[in-house]
Image 1 (cartoon, one colour):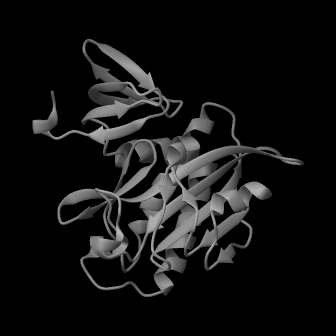
Image 2 (spheres, one colour):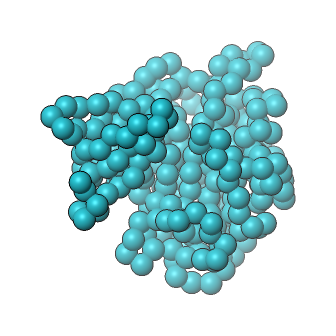
Length: 251
């Protein structure tokens, strides 16, 4: 992938959706940031909400790379978030769940702190692009989290509210990490595999057509797809919702 140069971030105290805003003019390098989304969306059309001022929504636009690198763009975005969360004074341990979740450790349990939504688009002059949104839980307390298994940066640290300046350091760390990963996708894939908590686990993959596949996650292939081994065969999944199963849940 080519080197990515980010434009100056466009900042909004509140906005409907950072992805929707970026899609109105998907210029490569564009960065849209908001402290609150009134109509945020996740994968498969799910809504994403957080109390005002408690989260950070970041959408960037990158030129669409050729396959197989194209499938890795959202995975590398999640890795960039994880790398940014591991840096600095307020660092927390972070790992990844295929395909689009960033997990942090809260009281010994890995919980979701961020999801990534990538959408293809076309720029009139620059051609195919990918609009990549990341919604990061920053300062929510437990009652603010409506999704089971979620957490926030504040809760992962086990401390009080975070200083306002950490949002800026997280944003800059994310942008720097994502640009570096896009510039060297081979190294990015290696780093992703090392940070992926899905690999080696027994999982259920809930597929877009409503079917279910269970087995051991053995590989993320060169296209960014998850390879699952079970019932005497291997299946390859380019999309789906993954559930990590505990020993007592396997059946």
